[in-house]
Length: 611
Ligand code: ADP
Ligand code: MG
Image (cartoon, rainbow, N blue to C red):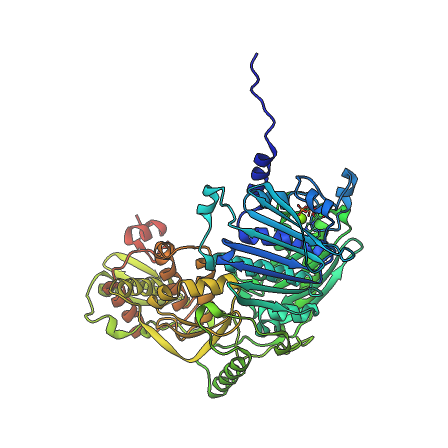
């Protein structure tokens, strides 16, 4: 009788568990910060080199561990946070699975040094790929220092999936930033390759948020308070004028734990439905407090997902509380903001803002040196700021004029007389569609889709012939980003220049847009660049940029034209038609929607029962 089944040795099970918990340097840092917070630390510093691929070190001033506990902490399922199954229903700590330390230690060269406050010396344990190599006493301050070197050195498959140092650094800084928002009473710092990315003193939520989402953005945040007998809600939500192209600035926490949850996100987005455009997302820091028995955090090893006992109650509470803020607040009474070329006074305001920002920023630093402004430079967020009209991130696209003649004429040297220009123009329907005829055909053209297609083709031609035409902005715009987006801006700087953008670091996570593709320079280039960076953030290499090029061009084209109704003069219609002929025009817009539709005379006659 043969025996097929074996129990796996612990170094293998740890590696398997590591596969779930330790995806990249940022996930190691998340676990280690959770441990430091659970240990009551009030000061946590994170240090990485090469994006954490070479080294990660977390130092805290928490309660530390005795020699025995330090040794035990590296065993699988060893935890001080729960004792029996019923404890799972009342978890108040961030950790409880007892998996992080053994998992991390099994896939790296690891060392743990820890000292309890009442002990004279600390203990240092050195582990390599899960095997304890050395245990010794050491001199150190009370607290814990964990060092993780050469992560995945013994898992070549994982190593291959790691992105560039800049990308990993971006993820690390984002993790530190979002955990720091959950605990403004704890000081955090994050140093990458000896440069300081973040230094956050102990403060309150308003100030902490101002440092994390940017001082300008924080002025558009409003406090939220709500809940019912089960749920307490608090935090800040943004005015509809402050939007992002993705969910990256929606920070949600349940009982202090950062989570990404569909129910929560859905409730947030429902509250904003109707006040922000589709595809735009607010800036939100939402803290949900529930009795531990009302929520199960033991759903996934990373503890990012949760299950609610009373899902709809939580959903309603969140949606209701946000809607309440949106209803009460001043912007809904404000008439639509016009975003036409700045007048002298708004221009003045831009200059003043930039001058002020320049004072805050720690001077223009080289791309790898972006730093965060220090606390004392950040003003307090006003409780109910007056919404200013100088600038908004959310442009209602109907406000910008539809102007086919904004396309530079010199790009179309000869006006080809092709199909579209040969049509005879009947007129415009609903200020949205162009009606033309050709012999026995009625041709209907979606003017928005057509001009988008023309812009797209033009961009493609320019791109093929070397460079997209760029225009310097009269008033360079500053833009606050997440760390990952800044990392993408730095990484793809050359490529972005090739498509017409000039971006410079401007201190902290702010960048300055000094030039944009000509087709969009007078629109809202910051909204566009935010979308593009959110796309690029997911890419590691410049090869990926080229793969995404067509998408990016279509994004630029989309931003260059105007949706909604717009009356056109006969001259403008014929201009558009001849441009449709002089570009390599396909019958659908870059999004795949049709541009034109033909109804034949025969079809009409059928409708009118003339046949
Ligand atoms: P968990 O956090 O789920 O308990 P971990 O593997 O992350 O599991 O940690 C194991 C144990 O080691 C913790 O329960 C805690 O007692 C101890 N520990 C880990 N990190 C620290 C730290 N920074 N300070 C003090 N104790 C720590
Ligand atoms: Mg833990």
